[in-house]
Each structure stands twice: as structure tokens, then as C-alpha cells.
Amino acid sequence: MADDNPFAQHEHWRLAALMIAVQLLDVAVTNKLCSTGELNAAGVAVVQTFHYGSTFLLLLLLGLILLAVLRPHSRLILPGLAGYLAFALLHLVVNVGALLFSATAKATGLASLWDVGAIGAMTVLTFAACYWILDRVTPGGAFLIPGRTGQLDRPKMFDYVYLAFDTSTTFGPTLEVPVCHGAKALMMLQVALSIVILTVLLSRAVNAVG
Image: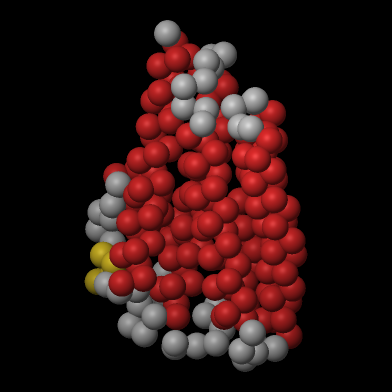
């Protein structure tokens, strides 16, 4: 690993803002998934458990960020970030799996599809955070990201959001190239989740206008 703390100080708060946005989306999505009646009691319990777990871990993430500000060379920062994002990815998989149960539900207009869009946004933001950290801790970078003079040496948060958005909407990278196994595995997972989300969106849209 290249560094025990992959971020500059001001970037820690951008990461926190990114994941707080994910958590706010999850609040709305969890309420929708658990109130539609499409999930049985066990499914509701799983979704709510992961929601509460992600809330708790978000508080730990904020604690890690505070630690990174006070002690930038602490060896707890990187394992903590990796653990948090691993849980965030698993939580995302659970939400997408729960969303599948609503694929054939009778929608009450296109406006009722907002939860699918919210999970799509959660996907983009969560994977952007994963790409951001992976790229910073991989020697030489996990991605080749084009820039004005060739390759960007220090991409910003928005570059990773753009990368994650591209991967979700085009089902794979466009100009950005993954160059390590971890990056390729993450992109494969994101593409798989994006295909499921699109399938649910199309199915429910057809039901809404049918």
C-alpha cells in the first residue's frame, strides 16, 4: 500500500459528504422498501438491519476522519475505510436484491419509480468512494484517467463520480481504464448491479404506463 492515509485533509470531509448523501438516500429507500408490502417480514428485517448497521458505521467513519485530521499517519485509517466501504457495498447489494421483489409491482405513475433512481444514485456514489480510495492506495493508480496533459496525476472527487456514473450508464468504462484486479472486480460488480436496477426500472415503468 502506498500510504496509510490516502487523502489530503480537505478531502476527508468530501468523502464524509459523499457517504452522508448515500445515507440520506438510504433512509428514503429503506422506508419505501419496508412499506410497500413486497417484502416479507424476514426481508424487512434484513433491510432494516443493514440500514441501522450503515448508520452506526457512518458514525465510525466520521470518527476515522477526525482521527485522520488529528493523527494523519495512524494505521487505523486505511483498514477502517476499507471495512466501512466493504459493508457499504454489501448493503448496496442487499438493497438491490430487495428492489428485485418490486419489479412486478403495479406502480402508480412514473413518479413512484423514484426509489429505483435513488438506489441508482447510491450505486454511483458508493462506487465513486470505492474507486477513490482504491486509486489512491494502489501504487501507480488503479485507473488510467485521461487529462489535459495525458493522465491525471491526482484526480478529484468529481472525477471518480464521473467514472462511477459512466460505468453505471454505459455498463463499463469509457475513456478510463482499470489497471488492477481490484478495480476490474469493482467495475464488474457495479455493471451487474446496474443491469439489475435497469431491469427493475423498465419492468416497473411498463407496469406504470400499462
